Length: 284
Ligand code: PAF
Image 1 (cartoon, helix red, strand yellow):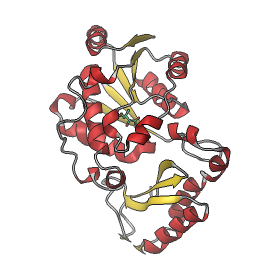
Image 2: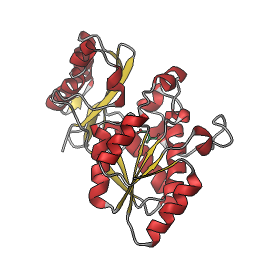
Image 3: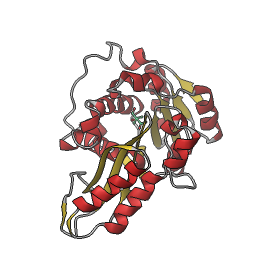
């Protein structure tokens, strides 16, 4: 495993590997790695000859400063996990390396309507920050294949849009890896480490609620099922930002279902101070 902190150094190294016909797989992360991230590394390992992973807590995607400060940072454990799982190259830059002119002013990306709904509504500017850093990272690593988790379904739509609309990224292949869950079906997330034992016992209600949506959607008005689902979460003390049924591809809300549009269920809810998100494809 080789670790780089400077973009010019990693770029030079990867250019040499590419010239030897290696296929470069890239897994961008913000660290605090868990098995979910490792499943992305494994997926990259299967498809690519070189696996690159970045660890960078990106300040521009946090609309809440406190959330940025509280974001878990576990670099020693992260490096050990990546070594164990045969990651070849780690990029671990400082903020100034990726944002040499500071983080205040950034160019805007045209991400389409998906930027402003769901997470975009509750975390204004979040997806601009994601697009900004991912664009920088893609330009540095120039990967053949990139790997993102379905856990952040809306983020995968943003990245797909970024790839489609950026000529320099047109050859990048997107891979979406299924969400990894605990035995009681809580989606793995770096934020889970901030939950108390009591909250950890309550958190599986999020997946139970998604399953409830899956089992109860019916043609016509979807608002009654959404109301019941919201009540399920609130009964366990969760405070919901949204419980949504959406078009699986565009993530636009579907309130009246024609029985054919492919649907996804998406939830964002607070357990105490910790904001959790999850989603489930509701129709095949
Ligand atoms: O999903 C994440 O961890 C982050 O949003 C990403 C893609 C690494 C960009 O900072």
